[in-house]
Length: 450
Image (cartoon, rainbow, N blue to C red; front, side, top):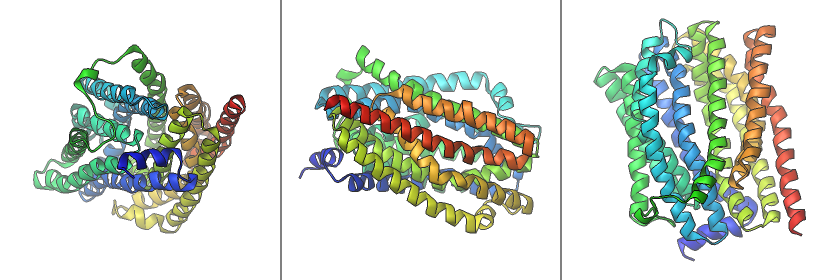
């Protein structure tokens, strides 16, 4: 069977559990590489024994999230339409959508860099940086903004590769970028004495290499689809489909960034070392986060393809297999965190205060893991089906109606402990809401098609 046929067979016909595992596990492995990407800056900055620079990396993280959010607007929107086009047998339109995604990513990256640098001081203030962290945060943010074309290009191309079932190829770019970042971090931070600015430069250069590797896979014809000059100008239909799914997807990540900023601003009241500890705990938790994101991303093209093919029975089977797989896996990860929290935090900081607070944070926020995978899988399934407003509704309820109000209320009522429990409570409620919504939607479409 040709590699192209194997990709389509996995999407259309392979046993649901096997298809989910086949697409998700390689992606999870690749995302562990992304975990290293996120952890390596924190580790090497921690080796400088400067908790204020450690806090600055955490404060600057929403800027990276926003940059990725804007790339997701194109990557998620284009990927959703590509999967549906392939499911409907229209490869020409899929290629046209791929090319449009690449062009729009370049345009958006220029806008992000320009606007971000104009307002950089205001941005750093909003992030919650105080006197001891302001300059460090600004240095990191400036480099990330200037290099946004590489970050956005890397993430978008990875999504576009996954949309056609080329999960293994999407991992190659991530792997190349992470290895580069690991090598360059100590060189720029310590060798060139650039400290936190050097960490940001290494991150940008790693993303640049990842983007180039992914682009070469398309150029060399290793993929099912290929960008083409004749498709540079997108049609109104393609633009509409990209933004119909992409804008709500971007708003989702932006709302997550807002919640992150609110969380950091509340944490500042408990001291800047608390911000540093929370940042380390969140980075350690990212191992669990990337596992559920891997399952959700691996399931997405299967759901999109079968929605395009109107195979609702298979969609239901894939959903059940995916939720069971991700929940069981995350329960194991949670147990590991519970046992080894102080040891894990101690890898990144020698400060007893940071280790104590960080372990407490990790042992609380880890409670989200058995629930959040189902929420993410439901949201990305709606995106795959070209139903972005359902996906956005899940995030709107999750962030604005539940999480941010709970942050404020529980922090006011119970202090730091209450603030930490806001997220686990939110995810438990959202698991029930999102799965009910998705199950009902697929069941209704199935009945209409009968």
